[in-house]
Image 1: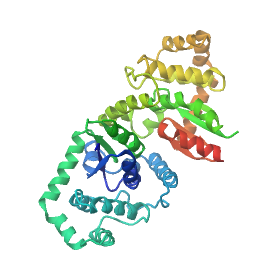
Image 2: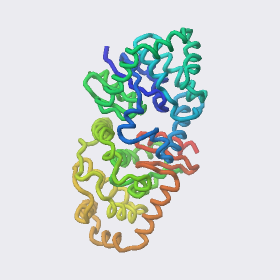
Image 3: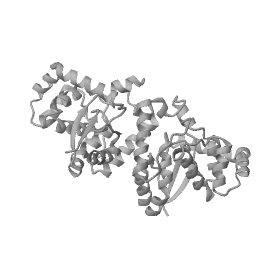
Image 4: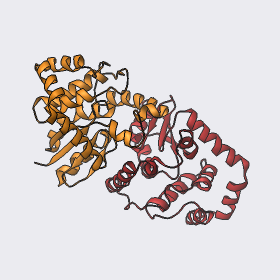
Length: 200
Length: 200
């Protein structure tokens, strides 16, 4: 079965749209998706940005939020809410998503974290936030959070994934890569990326 | 008939895609399009950028060119070429496009200038370049260039349009605005913008 890798930063607005759309689309295209959480902060930092470009460039940020409202309507998603602050600190969230990346609960955790942020407007930064999401998935939040915070493999994997993202030329989230090395950036390219993967 | 304003910088890669697609789509949506050339340089400059973000951020730039190649295939356009330098200086081109904005030849001139840049890879910066494009449209290139260079109204209109773009919150090209004040950014939003305009 053809494969596509879905690279996502958990604080990213447009990645929320892809996370909520990708399962159904991947079924339609007969493509297997690998969920790959990474941190965008170090990649932005390398080009001198200390926060999201949506904060650094206010006109771009203002229109992004309006566009997200329109896109949510188009895709039948709940009204968009703004977490405070934006972007959220996603270090713990990304460690949990890394821990779950090859487990059945990983994608469900990711989608629940995005919904908490952008459909409910809540924080996802603290261990209480993360525990609350894990609980809704009937998982042992305390044990998983402890593992994510103490298991050196999890930290190393997240660091290596972020490094790989940068090496592959990723500069934003969501991004999609195919087995032949194509890189697609943005929720608007999800269908194109799946079609490319399928055609290989 | 519903109306949509198409804001474009003549050096912009993705605006080329919109310029080549908008006539057919506007017919399908029954929407009248106003072509509005403006200069992105002063808007980029106001946020501290001295050139295109595709040059300032190399990973983004590299993937943009690859994405343009894929998009050109998708839309049935010729293989993408890179003008040198990129972005081209579009001061004269934008003055001509401003002069023609309300004339039947304006959109044709714009499309020919984009094709010259991105389907042929040629310069559009000099008066010879502009004259050569005007000649292919059976226009009096010398007279029009002289008018664009000397008519204070043309310069004032272009300056005012660029100022309006900034006031409306535009931060990139192409952008689309509707009569009720919605702002859509990017070739990927052309269909959404037309649908919004039609629904008013």
